Image (cartoon, rainbow, N blue to C red; front, side):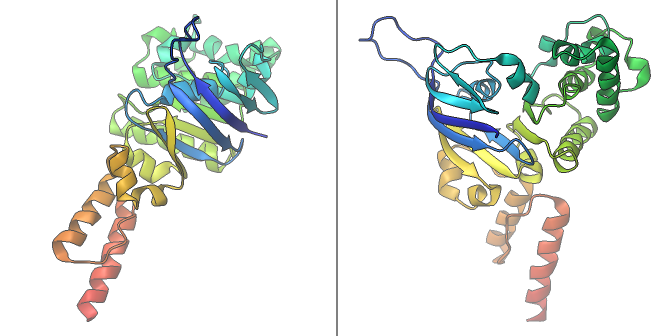
Amino acid sequence: MGIHFQEVSFAYYVPKSKKKPISFTLKNINLSIDKQDEFIAVIGHTGSGKSTLVQLMNALLIPTTGSINLFGNIVEHNKKPLLKPIRKQAGLVFQFPEYQLFEETVIKDISFGPKNFGFSKDEAHKKALEAAEMMNIKAEMLERTPFTLSGGEMRKVAIAGILASNPDVLILDEPTVGLDPINKREMLELLRKFNQKLHKTIIIITHDMNVVGEYAKKVLVLKEGNIIHFGDKDSLFSNEEKVKDANLDYPEMVKVLKHLNKKLDLNLNVLQYNKLDAFKELKKIIGEKHEQ
């Protein structure tokens, strides 16, 4: 049992008068996400409904119409859900991690989640240490106040605070924004490790098509509150009309190979998302042309 949306629409404001139209941020969303092994990138232009969608996934927001089944818990309008079992299984990390850090020290902040879910102080502390180690947070940082940390360090602490409760699904809003290339790569590789080795479902909002290409297994594209694509990335980036309709860009390697196809009249499979795979494809095709 994972996350299942059934005919979900959401509006931040519903007029009291039925004569006035409702301005929906999300419209008639049907969506199913497994609680294990998914790595989904949520993309779309600003205002398309991305943040709203992921906040519905852990009942931070409640649908205006329709229903959401979150790990066996039904969430719908005018029905108060049991939040603790939902939040324990679906952890949400905001784009600005300082919004969810509030304790005196890093270790206390990371411990807050498991304590809130009923673990003893000692158990919560142990889980916090394990989560800090998973996020490569150094021991000397644990007694510092979170508000003396850099943005990247804050983000690590926020994620560790979610991981300490061992959720099945980890949802992150723009987890790499503002990070330098080294910290960005480290963050993404950690998420990949949680997905591949711990079998957690990872859901990230991103505007970075290189992140989509290299890390996502599936892509969910929103446009004006509607899902216009939910599936593998190859089927998205091979559909020029859909990419253009959503006003999206291509990952860098795809753009390079598309350019070479046009410039040199090659027959490259342009759906390569990192330098090594692009090199192998070039070597294969150019080698074949040379032999001819």
